[in-house]
Length: 326
Image (tube, rainbow, N blue to C red; front, side, top):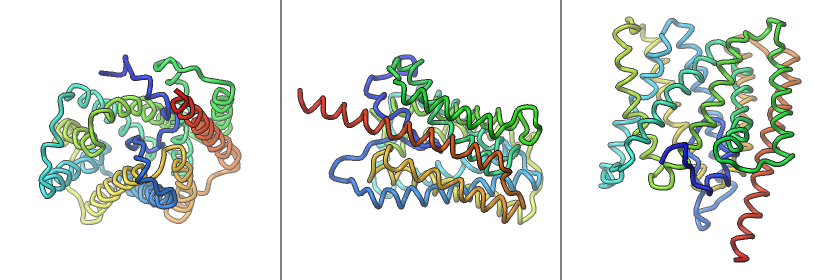
């Protein structure tokens, strides 16, 4: 089943998707450990912020974006294969939904190009802040694709979030490249779109299986571009590529682990700590502190995301109570 016919139970937490595009999977009741989930998610935000530093440094060193994406994806396939082989569970990777996995890989490739491209075009703090609009886009897609009834709270949050975008972007001011802002918002939109498909795949596939097929389908496509974009690299550049691959995979694993022990609506608040790391890294490594407009607009976008997460949490509790009463 594709995006055109989503299950109604996808609506429960679609607007509380992780800004990083991780797998959205609710934990079983007996595995819930909220504090551990928060700490793991906090670690994921830090690790993925470090990955973006490597992405930006790689771009500034002259490495083409397509090659950066290739090395980001390549280690995932052999490592997941090794993991399942050691556990004697390679059959877990068997899937009857390869077409859906291929579509998810296509959307994922577009999303990664936009996400990494935004990091190259914008300062880290601004790119990270615009990425938080994924929750806002998710509300809009919930109404348009899932036909979910969206109430005043979430529509107000959407409006608040886009006001924050305008405050930061300052159209016509020239402080933020409008192309960079558009690319970053496009990346956030793709995360929201991909989350709908991941929710569908999670009905029948394990999170690591979804990650495996994303890399298995996307890596050969990226490899086709290597003869046209790859050049000789210095040890420093190889170190950057190794770093972004390592931290990217570790971040994906931490996102998945956090969702084993806590609900999305609870742990998502930790994702906003990435703005702190992005600001510190931008200052310490790239000598760039956010201007006043970012300090004014970022809280509006973060507040919008938190309102959406809170509202989704409350709606989830109402749905659970309604089910128990039946």
